[in-house]
Image 1 (cartoon, helix red, strand yellow):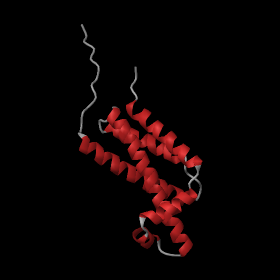
Image 2 (tube, one colour):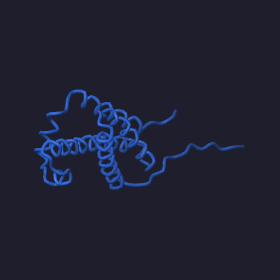
Image 3 (cartoon, one colour):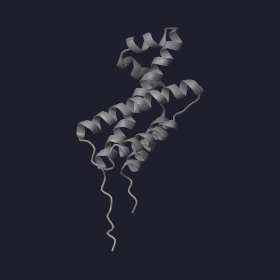
Image 4 (cartoon, helix red, strand yellow):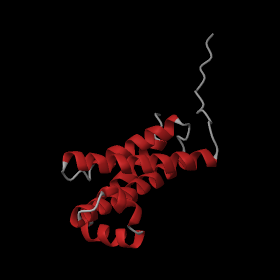
Length: 145
């Protein structure tokens, strides 16, 4: 006689662990997205969807394959988007003014960076952000039935 048991999800952390995972994965994804864009010198906006899936898989691996994890994946995706836009603004400013990127990153204030980013963002960018958030939430909370 065999007893079939359904695997229970591993509970690895609490809200503090989730917040740390969200913040760090969002910042890492934003930085990688910016580096990918600089390396390829092309529009890599759609890469945000791939990074959202990676964030979701990371949160699932950390034991947050639930509603909280899905919310965390969406927040991390938004953090990645905002941080990458800040980095893109710094790169644009450094190129236009001929300053070193490092100096520009440390001296440029957030309101100015937002104005630079806002001038280059379009509807397409926000549609990709919405798609990435939806994919992140779905991938995090997905359960086989």
